[in-house]
Image (cartoon, rainbow, N blue to C red; front, side):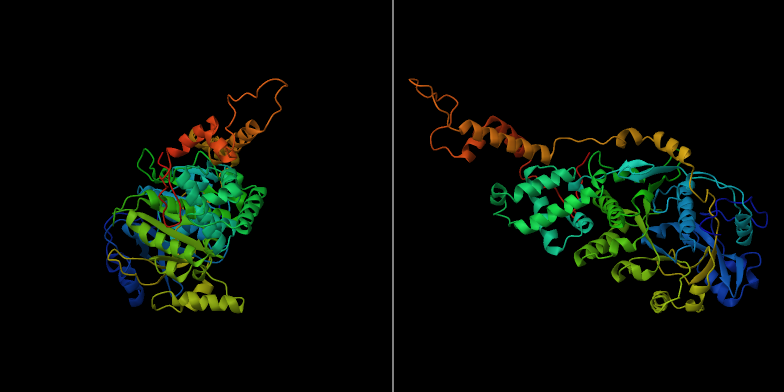
Length: 551
């Protein structure tokens, strides 16, 4: 079954499908189970869970598919996080689809990042196809076509989907520094800028707001504002401004602004109780990998910031699939990686499971990898010395097993994977080479017309489709500058008419400074009242410096 398969077959009659959630029996009690080799029987016993679970496929042992030995993931263990890895074209996308549609069927919302643009088919029933029919028969899967309730999102509104935007102030200085590729000193300076804007009530909704605040704080007047909390050097301000300008020139402005997407929308279920699958379409921003990977981290951090602690739950509140995960970690600072690690570790107790999707486990830092309890490893290539090194490193990350994993991982076929998960008791299950089931939804993209229709009919369309531009830092600082210029113009001396005494009404007193004149002006007083209402109400920021203004 390849990533390009675009259909599914008719239900096989070889054996009934075991419905997830039924009490499973030990493999020795299953028809034909007694004939299993002893080692295969031991592996199968490790996956005979009593509670609700997701069915991945059937055990492969000694070159044979053993359909009586089903490989599963306990539903309550999905918030122990996971990794789906493998070389390009080995079936990772279909594995995501298989897991996502089973989660949805059990009432768990799912978030999928669709980098290649081929996941929209999850909302439509699969179509009959011989390859999928044969696979279903092979693993004893009673295949029937079924789509999932889905919501389609698009980063910044580029492409098909409900626009997903974030305000600059909510995105925060740490994530924005990574997107702008700032160094540690520049990141700290950007944090100071955010701190000032938070305190003074200068809302940073879009990039022009941030640019206006940076320009103000690097001016003679602005430098005085920062003296008490640290300064902003002209050189650093210049670097940040140039980075912002280049960022905007690359067409990045649409991703920042209002209305900001409420990540709580990802936690919804359909009226029939199935979990909603939120598909974030990313093909239009494939050439901006740092942007979309960091945006995914913002969504996860935003959820972490807002969700209450729930501890261990019978089923996750959300399972979040983080595709192209290596892009998030490439070139990341130590502080950034520490924040990722802490977020992943702590968000489990808020009922959210995170699956990182990448090519090899070495793409994920060791501290993050240590937090992942579930593994689905597709085939790896070993064509170069670096590939061989990565293969050996991957093998060392698995528990001991009866397989020669170096050989197995290079010989796996499409739609096959090495699996180990967390059991219901929280212990790792035996390593199981698995022939995976076929997804029941359409394995390919929806046609454009159907996708556009689904977007327009969404309940979120009216809320997020149209961008808005409220008064914020840019407008406030522009008004402040205009007031200063007017006050200066009013203070300029004029030549009185001969024989007339110069008028004094409305004129500043002799010796009054320009700053005093600005402060005395009506426009500035109005601005000061607006800013004063928020003075000292600094925004609470999370591990990444992200912030949420409650709606």
